[in-house]
Length: 315
Image (cartoon, rainbow, N blue to C red):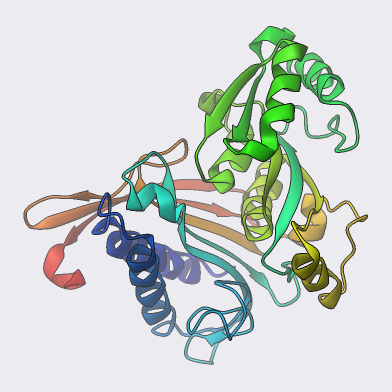
């Protein structure tokens, strides 16, 4: 991907993150998400490219902006597929909790899986253990294999899991295996990528999360040499129909290479609230400080970008 275009996408996530940050702790997740969506769409449409949202805020009937299938950009230049989450972890922002991001995954046309907004069963590991995980294996087996691959004791393995009632059995199984559990209230994009970053202290992601987050995380995980395995896990008949209407089944196991194809991929994120990947937005009297991450497939580079914005530029 063109380096200038990658930098333009950073400006998009920065704008969305700043817009959402103004709603931190105010108890209104709809307003926070709406502010991020509006800012992201406005910035996208200032860029010389032709983008199609393949995973967005929902169907056109559900989301007036950044819906799946929407065209963004000026319509000239590179043709790109986009998976977006203007504000991942809306509840975290609304209630002032840990971890929230503005995220974009981008690739050449046809490179990103177009999926319905539903749930997927997931397991993710970093480069050292990506080849040994098995979504159908017992929890204890996966943990033992990952521990061996990483040269750790089972008791040193940390598994990140969304704190949901549906994961009570999974959490108990991890504990019975002798591993450690790190519960997160939201945000399995960061949770899925964390095993690729040794300094995160996370070795595995397990559990059921949103399909959009699977594609977003898979882009970064693939570039960094990790692995994410997942399959659709619709919560009801309506969601099951969404899966079949998109031409998918609940039996197929997707790998990172199925979710994000080729090397012309870019993952861009800006922190809204501090999390395992990035610091959040800092708003001072006359400047805003943002912290972003850009991972590029062609070069294999990972860049952290700290930007100081004069606030009149965002008012």
